[in-house]
Length: 116
Image 1 (tube, rainbow, N blue to C red):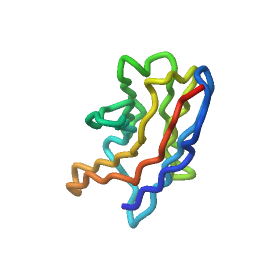
Image 2: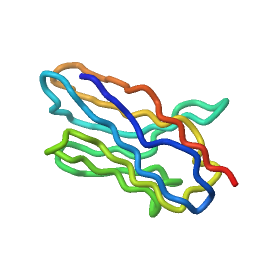
Image 3: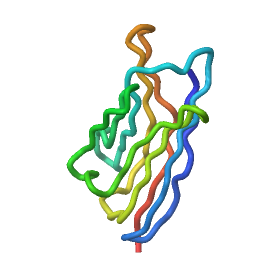
Image 4: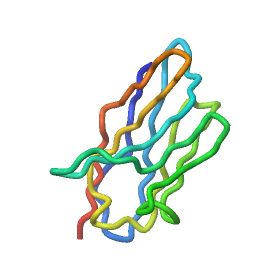
């Protein structure tokens, strides 16, 4: 599958952003999709994941501020981020997993910078 992430940008602390990840390919059925963040000088970490039945899981740092969702009509994964903090800065990557097809695909990152 092809994953196209967008929506990053520069935002002040306390602000909001919505990231999108458009999924395309012969089949977009997945088991798990998620958003991961890689801050400068740090390893990539899970931010939020969603299963194909809508179950979600969040990193502790994201709970209460971020919401992950999947739009089946648009084949698009979203991450709504509110009350952004400086430590949310990083490149955000969407991830697609299909266990049946042995897929674990990554999109190119979209950069989020939280700064005053």
